[in-house]
Image (cartoon, rainbow, N blue to C red):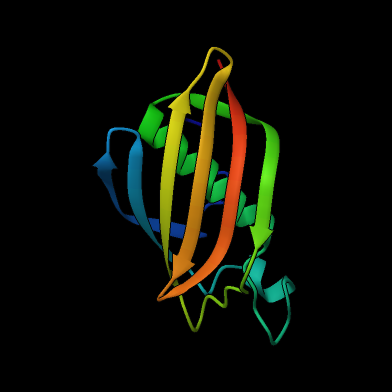
Length: 128
C-alpha cells in the first residue's frame, strides 16, 4: 500500500483538501453508498462504521502531513450522529494538527450538512 492508497478501496473519494490556517485543513469527501461495507452495516439501513470514519481522518492526515501514521491514542471520540451514505454522502472534515516529538496530535470535527457527526482527538506516531 502506498501513502495515498486508502485501506478500504472505493469507500470514499476526496473532493478537496484546503488549508484553513497554519495547522488546519478543511477536507471534503464523498462516500460511495454502493460500497459493500454498507451492505453489511446494516442491511436495509446503511450506516457509516465509526472506525471507518476514524480511518478516513488518519488517511487525510497522512496526505496533509506527508507522513505514514499509526494511531497511538484516541483521547476523545464522540459519535454524535449516524451517517447514512445514501442521504448524506458528502462529509466535511476539519483537521487541526500539531507536530510533537512523538508524532502528531489531531483534533477533528466531521460533519454533514449542518450536523456534527464526530468529534475526535488523538495522537499518531510516524511509521516507516
